[in-house]
Length: 116
Image (cartoon, rainbow, N blue to C red; front, side):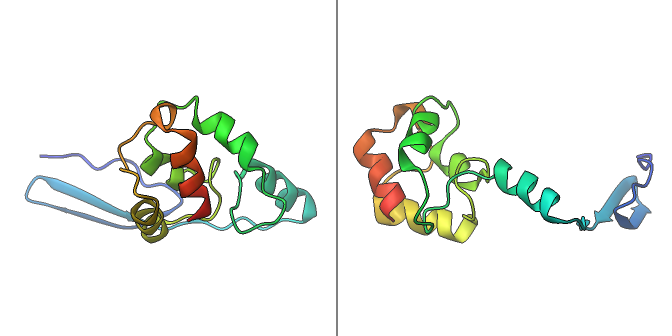
């Protein structure tokens, strides 16, 4: 029979039975001031809808990455604000396969992803 892992602060429900243990956790929220906001903002990647986004800096990082473009779009440290639905739509519109590694992406493909 499975043994339950110790509960964490975020564990809300733990179910045990028939040799299976399932834990349901919840997200936690941090409260803070401007310093915390600035720290979190500095960890985000480029946001395509912001006028001050730096597509060139992002291209440099993407073109060196072994991660797929599908994963990179979901990585908030690369592309800020993209969720799974937008990821799928962006790649469809750009005609780029999600399993294409960043380092295998052409500049034209990256530009289509960025523009989408």
